[in-house]
Image 1 (cartoon, one colour):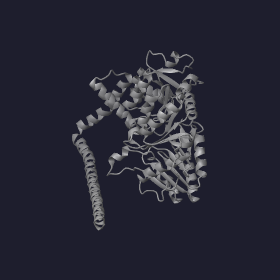
Image 2 (cartoon, one colour):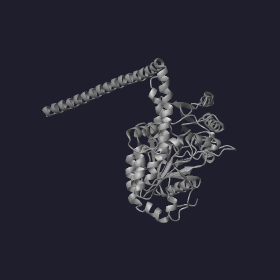
Image 3 (spheres, helix red, strand yellow):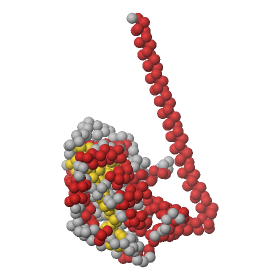
Image 4 (cartoon, one colour):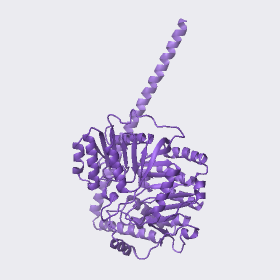
Amino acid sequence: MNETPAPAQRDRGLEPGAGRADILRSAMSRATGTQAIQGNRVGLQFEGPETFDRWIEAIEGAEKFVLFENYILRDDVVGRQFRDALVAKAQAGVTVRVLYDWVGCWATPRRYWRPMRDAGVEVRAFNPPRVQNPFGVFQRDHRKLICIDGELAFAGGFCIGVEWAGTATEPPWRDTGVEVEGPAARVAVRAFERIWQETGEPPEPSLAEGMPEEARDEDAGVPVWFIEGEPGLSRVYRALQLVAAHAQERIWITDPYFVAPAPVAHALAEAARAGVDVRVLLPAHNNWPLVGTVSRTGYRGLLDAGVRLFEWQGPMVHAKTAVADGIWSRVGSSNLNAWSLLGNWEVDVGVLDADFARQMEGLFLADLASSVEIVLPGHLPAAKRRMGEVITPTTSLDPEGSVSERIQRELRAGVVPGTGLRVADFVRAGSTFGDALAGLRPLGREDRTVLGLVAVLTLPIAIFAGFFPVVAGWALAVILAWLGGVAAVRAWIEGRRARNDAEARAAESLHSHAARDDHHIEDGDHRDER
């Protein structure tokens, strides 16, 4: 597809130049909780094999330290290649620290990490399961970050596994990353060290200490926001809502697990109603079973509002990106669902630069060439209503056949079933179920499918509890006692900590008052002597 934004659109997107860019810069800093970092060079990465070659090259060129953080490191040919590169740098005397997520790497055997530790690599697992913290399993380190010598950093959606590199018979997953060289790379080091402290003792020595401060010259280089997502801090969530409210021409989003919270979905819908070209690209063949069917429960409202939805026909699109008005871009690890936006540790890079945004738009349009547009039954695709725009294939939101028939078609097409549904899908199912019971909205075919899925999952549990009430009751009692006991202990510990802090502050205040009184007495004595 050779579709490109019209010149008039591009001009309007950048028209205010200083004006709109300055407003967006200020508002973005408030939304993300971080200031724009000037003086950077940024590069776009979108091919797995080439991206991994570049990462290995950067690791091999490190002279001071390598900080390596990823949600998934697999014990396959790709994972072992990175392990060997990290081991070689550690043996050469370079500081190497590796942080992986325990859930993301649950299938990676212990023997994979042994050569690293033997070579002096500091390896830590993020948030392994603990009896005293059962709720911690829902908070994961989903970040993908590499820091080299405080001068170079990589972030994005690429995990370490053969899926992202491809094989002789299977093409690689489509993902996107960003390479940042300059002051923002030093901010990345501080971000790594903050989450490293969450897993144990702080780094000794701190690699961030002694590094020069970031440039603040408004005219120097490409402005970058290094956005650190943390549980309860909705930074990317707020940034996306800000962009949806600010955009005048277009917002193009790519997301693999699109189960957008209601405020985000409403922001995109309102932007589309206002005439903004809002497009969302999603995978047609998701690596989680049934996620396509379940996530489609949110399609209808967006399509009604004029948002255009496309499904990529390749093996899997795993990129998490957005580009708006040919000037602002985001590349990172955050998925547009509540779990990722509000519950995980994430890293995203925001870029305010027209050249980088044009690359992002070109990549998005290239992906559309391998996509099918989803339309409501009986509706013309938007492409047919716009003059001069290349028409993409379309498919109806209500496809033919039952759910079981569609699953069988996917299996015959070679889609490999995964291991289970995401929590976000059950959240969506709960929302649909609640709306259905309350009669808040008519349900489409996909919504009815979700209700059927909920019934299939809950009825066997109810039947088991009916036949074995004692077993079910004791199981529930044990689970509730465990959760309640942990909550009670946590509340007592936090209460005691709060009391100790209050006593310390009171003692400090008393000491400060006493010091001021002594100072006043001394002043009075001096005046009496005079």
